Image 1 (cartoon, one colour):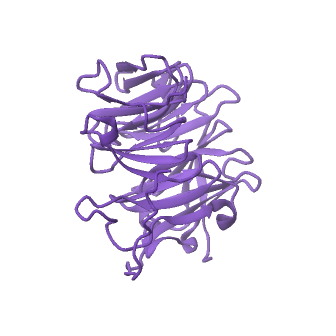
Image 2 (cartoon, one colour):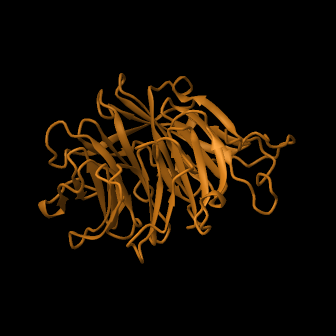
Length: 367
């Protein structure tokens, strides 16, 4: 491993949360940041001082608030979902709820995603009465779901993510171990399911690393990367070996848990935490021959949230600022000691090389 770059906090805030609150998620909204927490509140705060004003606190957003997504980083509009079976859209400038969507059976929602352009929202439910669903609404006509997938998962839908450039391509992950890819323009549920990756472990996080590559991270920290089928070639987009199986990331990264994988324009960063040592490391995941860890560019956050678990991370590229939120109910803003350009620092300087062997034909085996 090369020398580790240290990041230090320049601002810390509890956002005036009640005692024993957890921070669940941080998102960029216009020139501000927004966070949701275990007291069912949504709070908008300044990205430099981390201070929140009273008129930027939205209380009782849901009964059991669990999800937050921004419409885009430029617009002060967000969507939330909760265990109460509601999805709600909010205009943060006016402080008003603009749209309310409801599961017809009041099934708890566990996951949420917004399509590029903000015209569609998808929400995934908890397994209830032997059924877990993915529901999609067109926000231009939100009276009822435009689609409901009721057979694609047989356990909690824990992750949803739209393709970064194709608004009709949706990913879902579940505790049944499957990561599904849908074409939402196809009305029939069976036909809309265009690809299935069997991670063989309960999905904690999943998403798109590139236009073709998908990562899956399990609740027991097993990481693999899969490649989507090329529609033109009927095979993976090139001849690299997929899936790429990293296995349990805890011994590989000397950590105790993985917060998530942050992505931006083809760059990926693994956030690995250790509550016993009060640290969090940011390790680049580079694309050369397949995908590789680059430990030489690790950024370490010392005394991250003391012994508490870090729940969320947001990296702001322009200002080289790292934001974290944890189970201590605190948000911290960090900058590296050395001048690095956040995601640009994590990008690989290596050139991509070809390999001779063919792709693993079992990479998309659904069962």
